[in-house]
Length: 286
Image (tube, rainbow, N blue to C red):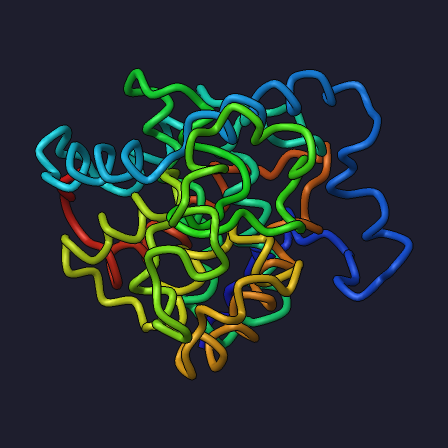
């Protein structure tokens, strides 16, 4: 029998040796007090916190909930992110498509047996293609939060950016529960409009076969006031609490794989194309 020499595993091209539990490493990320990108970040959040209202979110859900705007594949959507730099991110200043591969490969390194989890890393920010369809970044990127109830303290820049938001002093929307009931469940909460909710709905509408844990990660990965700040627990039901550890596990890779070392996309692409073909095949409606 002829022995065939096998070359190096292409997946080893980019697998950063980052310990998600390294406290010192964590301090380098999500710095909202200083840094070269702070002015850009603050401006984005100021606009977001001024205009993300109940009425605005309902309008955006109605507009983009028709899924009649574009017909493209997942990998075509990913390629579009070559043209997007997230203006809310204080950590990096490179196209979002690279961040997708960085996150996916970080997950692949630690969870080689969960291919659906790896695909979540690739998909999680894909809803940001909205910013390439004439939507301003302040209603596409950044941390998310519920509208229709009191804005909680752990929201980034909470103290200085909500003054001009009309819901901030609304007699119902400014109360603890607002338009919701205790422990109603996050699926019944109106979240600020952005890439999380949009991508979640795209995947649901197109009947992609990802597990519920994956859909939760995509829908709530930017909901930092919940999964990191510990706020909004009064709106959560048992399902939300059971999914929270999965969202937190994903967050480790979303945040701590950001590095200026760029992945070799051409070598990694075949692996992720196979995952797309398995869980989200063909042309999707967006």
